[in-house]
Length: 419
Image (tube, rainbow, N blue to C red):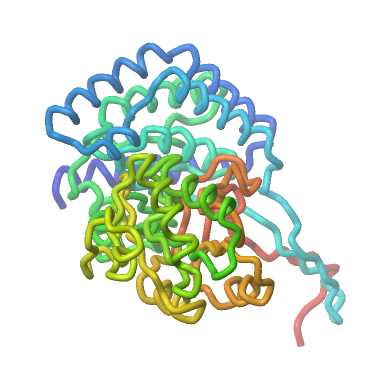
């Protein structure tokens, strides 16, 4: 075992011990730690922003893309938003100890299913320093310990945030090891982390396709994938043009670099002549590059010709694939072939088409007559999220507090024995 492996194992062992200390703590204790984290973020904002400035300078020097810079960048407003997100988590009901079901069996025993902490979570992510704070807050509220491995592009930012979190934990009587940021940013650290089968209960990778595949292929612990967001909007024949334009613009241009942003627009051929040109003009006016199929180019010649690589692609930028399809069946077929299981939306006036979309689309979130951007933990009432899972086990969609717990059976008897 290498020195790096030893250091990662030591961190996970400390997290396991910390998890045992955090799991039984009262809600008031955990909320006090979260309040201290929020206050620490506000008090240390200048130090956090200076660390982030150094990360941004290094990223720009390497030619990092605009979308990646947006995910990496912190400013005073984003630091305040992080602090507020921690307070929102503290205000949420504590899931630990919730009795999900209770029954009395014919033998006379009382049987309950009770929600309990998951244990030790390994979080592997890229670029977004806010994940360091929000993932830590959620894990702590759920009674878990968390080991975070951020990307090299956010190394200084994450170290500064880790100090704030650690100081807050220590000041409120919780172990610093309950929320750790590994100081190692190379892939060997990821491999070592996701192979700690005796110490880590769940790995959550959040980032680019290469990172997700690396974690999945190397893990010896369960993995919940936060895979790419190839999100579609289908404009059904007869859709309201004003609503369609508003929804598509919001889904694509409000924040192109996030996983719930629109990446491919599908338009029903039966009404494409009415729907497509005005929507395309609005997108182009907003600075979006369109890459369209032949039928798209016939209706909007300003678009670039799409290639086969544009279908199923996550741009994370002001670029949008556009395809004219032959009705709902063709739209469903396209989504089934090229979607990533993240978010799929339809704009329609047809209740039957809306119901088919809800029933037949296989994704973590299906949307009718609204923007894909609503697939977000805060918008869905979960508070901060640790990410949006596209795998099926053990969770799908935004991972809030409930997703960071598991169940145990509790049996209460009065001397019963089994015959």
